[in-house]
Length: 342
Image 1 (tube, rainbow, N blue to C red):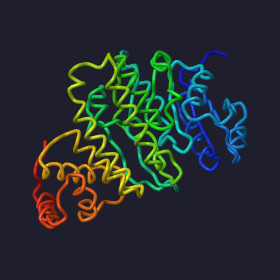
Image 2 (image 1 turned 120 degrees about the vertical axis):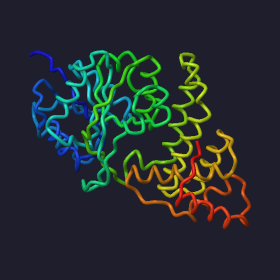
Image 3 (image 1 turned 30 degrees about the horizontal axis):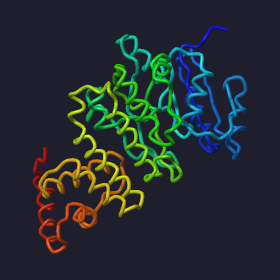
Image 4 (image 1 turned 135 degrees about the vertical axis):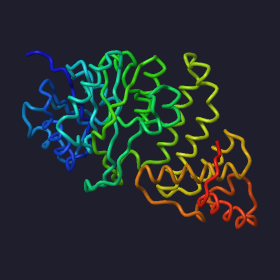
């Protein structure tokens, strides 16, 4: 039997309730030369029964629970295709033409090592929350742009197999932010990534998703940045952006921590953001406020109130509580008329 051109790799752990929708969305793809590989990272909830119900249509392997990186690497070893797409087991493709459109993008620009696309955020029941078009903030998918925006969701990507193998796959030292670390490593190696400007998949939000683990996510994301900025291969023009990149990353992490219910950790992350990029207090506050608003709107999540934001931010910039009303009035003016901070 000839090898398929595309391997879609699904790594799953206790996702019996979402795996069928994921696999069905792959099977409906009209591109014929494909295979589905499901690696189960030690599920105990009936995931195995769902996967095996597809018979020979799915290559299924059950492993000891060793974490997402090792299971994704194991899936890559099982894959036979020269193009690789990872689809998380609680996500699913939105149309039957996704694989073909990715491959058309590769054929149109043969030098590409990977193609990235947009995604739709849905809630735990599959109801749409918002669409993400990351090329609007990051028109070029290069190393410098990625460091600022980090559009790393694996379900919205397709890779040439070789670029993953040359990078050594996913690093088992990372429990979270494994995708960010991988992309930083392949971009440091000079990989070329292009956009497929289309919403291709649904990214499901659920209380037990990796994204919900905000404190561990913060730690591993910062470790990925540490690795990138300590690399001798980092171009000098990118290295000069380190303070700004670290500041913007801490602002995003502060929003994540606030959203997940960790206000003291969010305030500390704001303090780190302001430490990495020294600017006047009013600019720091406006930059943080805008970052929180932008992140909430792009994720379709709740918006922090001005009062709550000031409660997080004023201690981070060492502004006395007695001046709270002054800065609250100032942020209200910013919200009404807008004042540039960069």
